[in-house]
Length: 211
Image (cartoon, rainbow, N blue to C red; front, side, top):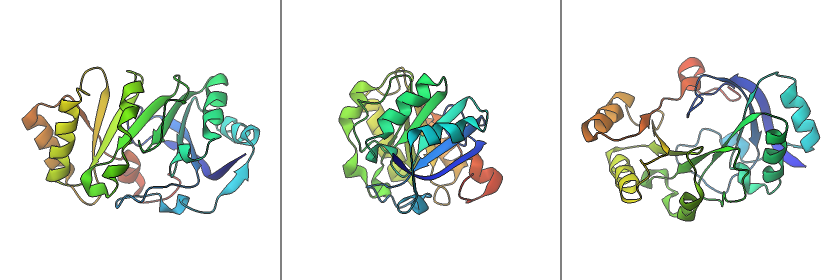
């Protein structure tokens, strides 16, 4: 059983598969409290569902792509079993995780989108840096950038840890805090090998839950 906030069909708004029709499975609960969080409604509540029930609901949408998100989905131990089952069912699966929880047990068929926390997030000290040791080219690393200071910190981290070599690195401006064009200018000026990404779902629908 897993506690689920919602299961819904929408366009993937971020990361490598942005724009693809995707089924989202949002698990309830998160041990972090990032200042820019846009899914606080997933901290509490939810409904207990058996993994078989979850897969049945996913299948109803007839979509190949599935994103498991939260909250922090890995805060629920049975999330690993859900990811395994989704892969076995033939879905292309991505996992959105904060980077504060060990990802080494996640099925390697899953594209792990590791959201490393910047200083302005308020949760930088929660980053579990050992997660970087198990990443593969199939995975992605994301930085939500709130300010110039955040940008400089992220730039220093990717260079000192040589993250630009073989990984998709995503720089996302914090919605409402940093102008996307400004972030793009910094990336171009520094010739960083990263992707500047916008939150497509917010551009299309604004701050609407379940989109």
